[in-house]
Image (cartoon, rainbow, N blue to C red; front, side, top):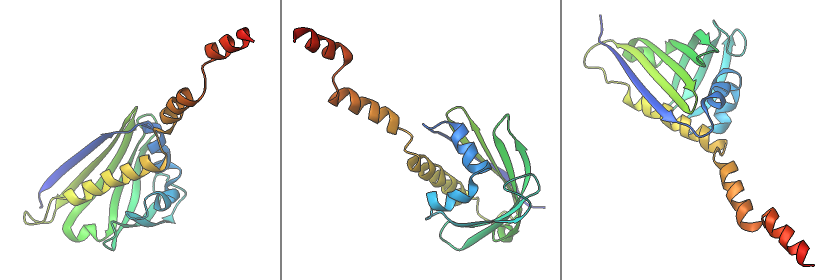
Length: 171
């Protein structure tokens, strides 16, 4: 029996967790367009778009790493999805590997639960960094702080309504 481990990364996201959950639950096919340097291909092998029991295959990380995963669970209330790796490269290093993505309020969290084949095998820190990069790419793609920037630009360039009223009363 191998050594079990769990790594967790949680990041604040300006767009809100609901947007990340939507990307990972219903619009996963867009992820290669959003973060092509991290995921260049996403394919549904069995089932429907991300339903429990669906099998997907992703090409990840620019290192020709493939992961074939089955969706074990989906909780719309907690906005979480459990992906269990069932084939490909990760299972050469690990007896089991599960990724849990969850999104609450302004937080996106990825949990990697795994069992290494031996103590000498590495911890999947690079894979955790990979999920952080994917999260940053998704947030950057959606330009989450665009509205606040637009609002401040509007205030800078456009006169306030009180200024307009003062000008019209002077005419």
